[in-house]
Image 1: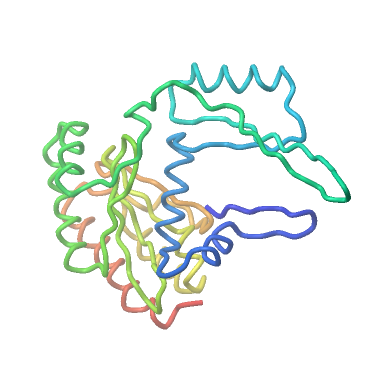
Image 2: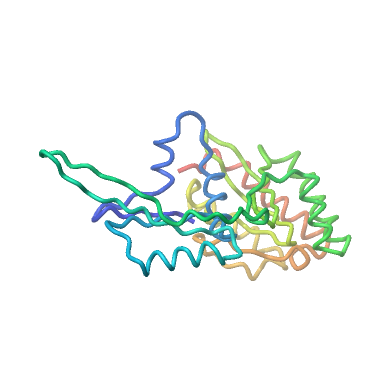
Length: 253
């Protein structure tokens, strides 16, 4: 996912603006993961800017904020212009603030390993699924440069990261709903297409992954139960990820 902002004929990438505005260390991949999950879960605030708010817009905003069961909220920033003695004054007023207390279900949280596996166990009654994820997590601890635990509202996740040249290479993510995503969309931002195609070839040679398309603008998802039916699939998957790790340094864009 790449958020694009249009200023007339000028196109700006959101992550580039944030990178310039943030002082100190900043993790682009983690930022994009957070934005993706916030959009998927509805945990964000939409602000529209108008010269003058009318009654119809005011009613829509009040209705959405009072009766929506999600964490999403809508606001309007009314900016009125006044001129006095050759000086222009902008007077902003924010509409849409609600007295409704925030729902705990809408609050983002930083997941822990224990919480991740607790929720995974509750949502996936089959012990073999939990055992597979535990195996992937333990292997990731020994192989990845970093494991990133997500901030989803209801769905927890952990992501396998390689770190090269100050950049984060996000390879795959496992979720508490029993699914795994291949992060092709993020990989393409940092790796050459040739290496990514070779990585995909290794992934698609796993019989249970052969249906995964080589669309590198996507984040293809597969159920853990469907993708890892035996120890052989797990081993081949690990080998493909390790193969990628040996090449990310020379394949950086």
